[in-house]
Image (cartoon, rainbow, N blue to C red):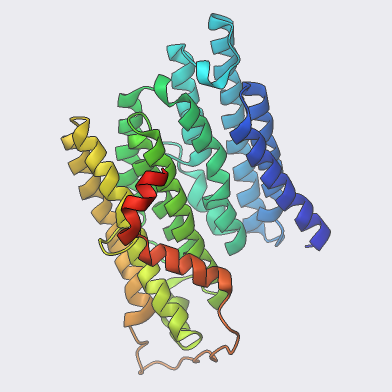
Length: 346
C-alpha cells in the first residue's frame, strides 16, 4: 500500500479514537466510531485476497449495525430525558440497547461471530490494531456510562464470553483465530467488573493491549501464522521465541507474570461485591483458555520438530530485535512486583 495512504488511514484511526474518548455528546462519539470503521477497512483488505475482502465486508456490516444501535439508544434516551450527554444515559431501554451495541462493537458473546473471521482475514499488523486500538472507543463509552448499565446483563455476557472464548479456541490451529478467542475471553473479564470498578476495566485493557501487542509483533517478526510453522520458527530467533513463551504465559494470567495482576484484582473486587460465585465461575472458565495458551507455549519453545519427517530449518536472522518488542516484552513479563505503585497511579 502507498505510504501516504497508510499514513492517512493511521492518522484517521487516531483521530476517530480521540474524538470518541474525548466527546461528551453522543453524535460526536458516533462520528468518531464511524471514522474508525472507515479508516480500518482499507487496512484489512489491502492484500486483495478474497478472504481479506470477505473480512472487510463482515467488519463493515457488523460495525455499521452496531453504530446504528448506538445512535438509536442515544436518540431514545434524548426522546425520554432531553439529554444528549453521554454520562446522562438513564433510560433503561437505552441502556440495554447501548450494552448490546457495544457488545457487538467489541465482539462479546453472543455478538462474537464476526471477530475471529475478520482477524483471520487480516494481516498481523492490522490484527493488532483490531485487537487493541479499535477496542478502546467502545470501552471508553462503557466506562462513561457504567453507573447506568445493567449489572446482571453484563455479568451474563462476561461469563458467556469467557466460556466461549476458551472453549472455541481449543481446537484452532490458526494463531490469529486463537488470539481472537483469547481477546473474547479477556473482554469477558473486563465486562464483569465495569459496573463495580470501572478503573479496573481500564487497567485490564491497558495490560491486555501491551501483552497482545508483544505477541502480535513477535509473530510478525518471525512471520508465523499457524501452529505448524510456529514449531519450526525457533531456529529463526531463539531468544525472541523464549520471550514469546513467557508473553503467552503472561497473557494466560499465570502468577509471577504481569497478566496475573488484573485477574487477581478483579477476583478480589468481585469478592468484595459479594459475587463469589461469579468470581469462582469466571476463574474456572479461564482455565479453558489457559489450555490453548499452554499449547501455543509448548509449540513455541519446548517442542522440537520430529526428525523423521523432512523439513526445512529456517535461517537464523541476524537482525537485532526491535526496541519496541523489547520494551513491550519487559512490561509483559515483569510488572507484577510493582503492582502497589500501579494501583496508586490508577
